[in-house]
Amino acid sequence: MPLVQVTMVEGRSPEQKRALMEKLTDAVVETLGAKRETVRVILYEVPKAHWGVGGVSKAEQDAARGESP
Image 1 (tube, rainbow, N blue to C red):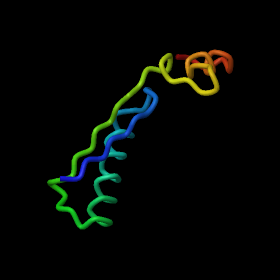
Image 2: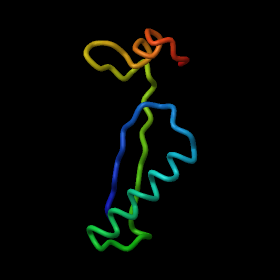
Image 3: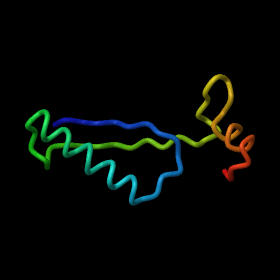
Image 4: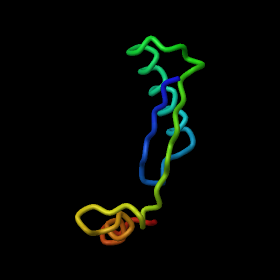
């Protein structure tokens, strides 16, 4: 049973997350020959305030650019 885990910053639409799960499943089926029904995909969404790059959170970076949270 292949398991794919993705950690990403929150904010994607349900449609984007669904498409990601589908494409990842397709990739595992095609590359490993796994049966589709055995592939598991887990998406972990991290709040922007908890995702730091270069010592600054994504929330702070977005605020500095004038983007909404």
